[in-house]
Image (cartoon, rainbow over all chains, first blue to last red; front, side, top):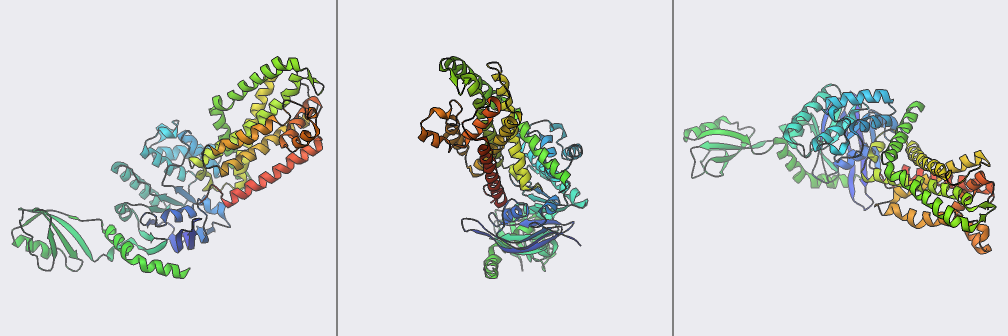
Length: 316
Length: 257
């Protein structure tokens, strides 16, 4: 399988001496839907900035579909589309002009650029706004405009830096559908997001970065299997004045009608429900306390990092 | 990128730049027309009629080439400095940086865009001047070459200013405190032969003097300086500014972190 993005020993030290990336390496395979996660300041945007040629690297290698970003920059850039975190188009230009101009920067003739612009503007529900100045668009429309602009030269690798930040739920869902459709048609997608349920539902592989070090790089399935204990919130009836005693389960009561129960993977849920039923307690609804990926994310970032960070420093 | 793709990228950028300054024509094309018309009326007609001849020509004829050149210089510079700084400020420079457009095409697009505005304003001012005086063409090739080279030179200057600018104040400091004084002292309104020897020597350190006088030579056939030396100086400065601009772009100064 072709490697869509290959990053080797990538390091970035800013002029103030801050080491944002400590020699990270990872690959993203063609056709993948890859999540690059990490807390604020972890190095996600720096990594994507270097791949996008917006940030100068200190050392290391980046290849896009086998094209080296230093020696074959034009070929590498043609394979890459970038949707940045912040709006970065000319607010005074018309929507269609933004796309046609961007296509021109890739050497696409005007007639073809207009056809492609129409296709993507229609696809993303912006065709009716084509003659409007971009500043008049709503926040969600501006996000979609940036996606259309990133696709107008038809890249094989699309990078999205927090594309759904500040977007309402309905629009977020429609963007997810669009991205899944795009991925199914063969476009490799790399996504950064703070919405972990978004990463869990969309992405097949995941890299977690913190303090300039990759602390986890695996498939989403393998990662989620590492989760040994899940915490569930149970809404119960009737109301309880004391926490019920449940053998082998760690239970706390949160108000008379809500229980929080830690369930290990080996335990299963049947015995939990049986014991509650025996005590005359009915479970009216149940949900995870937090997203499964979120639990893993927090544990990885909080616990694993200090040793990894040291290891990263030692490797340099 | 193939040559055809490079040309498309260049043309796209040039068209975008021209579209920008024509969209805001009331800020870019109208003010120099009004300002220069006032110069023609006040300095050329009212004051000039009392001054008499300058360099063997009536005063209006003498200042017209300088005023045309002043418009070209100011507008070429201000177009690139404001456009490129805005591009940085609004971050849509990133549209170019992520694309395969090479740095020399980026530079060429902005510089030619600025030059087009400078030349267009120069043409407007020339047309207006015809309402006040007759213009003769002494050497067409000198006129066209020097005005084009001057537009390129000051567009490059504007580009470098924009790269270093971190605020809107920074894009007005050079035009206000450097460009305007040099232009006024660059022989637009007087022949340096009127000055004492010492100040003539000082004036010859002003690069704008060479451009104004070469352009005036192309129209009137008179100049305070050697035309060959002027061309050498202008082309030399263009080479230095172009090289420095490319260095700034290649290292990402002011545009890449």
